[in-house]
Length: 294
Image 1 (cartoon, rainbow, N blue to C red):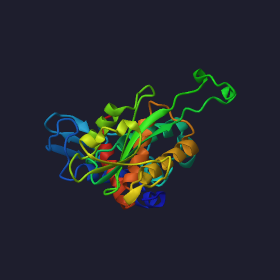
Image 2 (image 1 turned 90 degrees about the vertical axis):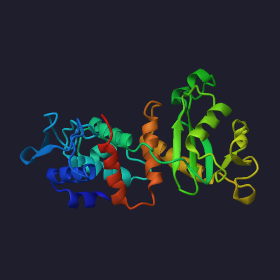
Image 3 (image 1 turned 180 degrees about the vertical axis):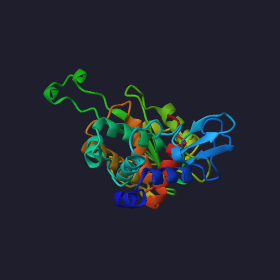
Image 4 (image 1 turned 135 degrees about the vertical axis):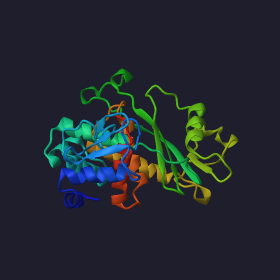
């Protein structure tokens, strides 16, 4: 769904609310506070009254849209723009496109990224795992100084992608983290289905040396070639890292360690749903946003 489709489908705020109610309450209106189905509609106020807890509520209560002062159409337009921007969309660009304050645009994008958090299943089949480092460039005025104290450390990120499902999972580590066998094994066990049907593909980094104790493991020596025998490579996960790097450098320029996981939520979500019809993806983000607590 693109911005033209949003303009045509959601001309009024009432239409936006009606769509949220259809997505959130497929089996009937339920109280946002006590989950009771004994509610009475208040059409004029676009709210509902719970006959059990005696509270009134709207469809946006307890969601990323709660307490917003913006028209819901603005949120829908922002979501459409973000979903169609393969390499990301900066808050300033969104502010210009929607004619809103840049701080408001930043808050909208962060709330949407919060709803894009991965909630899928374990990766199966042939799974590629690789690590990448984001940021850390020295300040321009300190480039001539070789002292490490003048250089900002990079943020390490672990990633895994299944060739079978096309799903990718990422995890941001602290800058002081040591990427050793224990850390890598823990990441793999949390995100990969450990059975006889799964095969792990990595480079020859020593941290993966003990993976073969619990999972089939093949490696490729990148110092010699990009692809080993029988198609052993990590090209899929490295292709995803290329999208992330180009997005961060080209769109956002700089991302703090604290908010980096949310930006990765965005890149991962778009990647994981790249083959799905955009209207279905649009509704999925809305559904996840409706189930997110503020």
